[in-house]
Length: 332
Image (cartoon, rainbow, N blue to C red; front, side, top):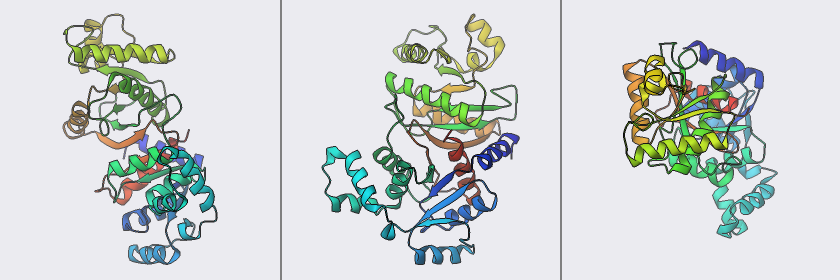
């Protein structure tokens, strides 16, 4: 495990956040992760389900529930308040009381509403649900961060060559949610990814919008879209270092950046990479992971008003713990 991951866990311990793990009642990995999260003092795990069902799963997983917060939706004293808030959030659906209650029986929606009501600081799910399920519940219950309309994803990549990013740590985005982002969505993705970099890596995000072209070297609408998105983000967020369009080598290698984009503050120094579409982002992170032997953590959701993260359905217990710790850091 890299030094950065150790550092992330130390930061999570210092924050002491409550992270909801709503799938524990149906997933042994998740209840084991709740136990480990509590034992490592990374924060307070909160699991959802009836006392009987949770005890049965804990026995199956051979762990104790001591020190783990539990909430039974059927006995939840603030259910009327939750139902009313959900009806307000989904006002355009004109849900009846019974319809809203039927939705909130789903642990994903119940957990996301606990976050929305500040009864949990964040949520980590997806061990037994699809990414689409997790995102749908998050958008309906929590919604995008103020100023953004797009919920996207990022990967925290830690490469062995520490000359890249900050000690080898970079953010890749979007690699898991939006197949063909519009220019406006790309601007939101870049904005959210910069915040993700600050939260997880620390230091100043240096944002590069990537393309097959550098500064007009190819005259193509796809390259121009990335250039226009970079310019729009720079206008929206003058506090950020942003540039594009840049080829991957121009973004990362100082000598190439100086040659291809002289005068750019970003070229050769980028640590937050924005990809033109899901194909490019997904391929890039997997190649970096396999060929460069990088550690890859994600897809981490970004752009929500409050943090929720998705898990691979092949996640291990350690994966759940790590992503829950990252979720705690995204509360900052």
